[in-house]
Image (tube, rainbow, N blue to C red; front, top):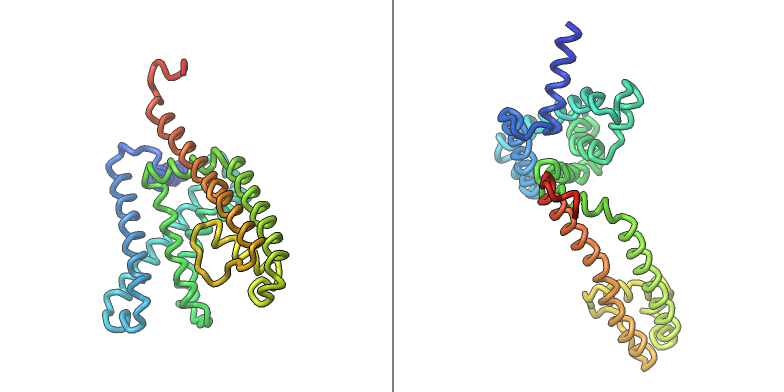
Length: 263
């Protein structure tokens, strides 16, 4: 009996983690989950018309069906996660898996539905239902392109942290200088360094809403200088990301080649 349960558990883990992409049944199961996630994301948009679910009963029934499927999927993932060496311990392993980012996505996508089913009618419940959109994050496991992106971000996380820290420092310096240059001329708009920080963000990102801008000669000089600097600084994360994705693609294409070890 225990051997039979262990076999079922191993097979279920294989299905949910796509460990064998050549297994046709695995493709069917994950294709079904993929489609269900997409349809539920569309339903979140449909639900923004408050009367829609009351007009079309089948939409509500489909939501109930989807939430049951996602709940069973979440429970199954918690049960079989011990098959992975990282979560091998029966209790602590499951707790560690439950607090992993993608597991929290699964939990938050179903939690509002069950709170409502239990009669917990909180005022924020309708907004919490938008958490179902987080389920789109699960699509990464179905697409190699998504996996390239995740792998790229993970492989260059130190570079990303440094570039974002550099952006923050330059924004802070620019905003501080702009505050001292413009505060006397525009005390309402440049009332503080945090207020000037808003100017820095919209200027560096090239959005330029026009709600706050320098009018003094010194302020215009500082603004022009940092606008030019901002273009290169804000482009840095994009360059790092592009290089990382290209590295991921190159590594995937050279995998398994006889001469790949020589490169």
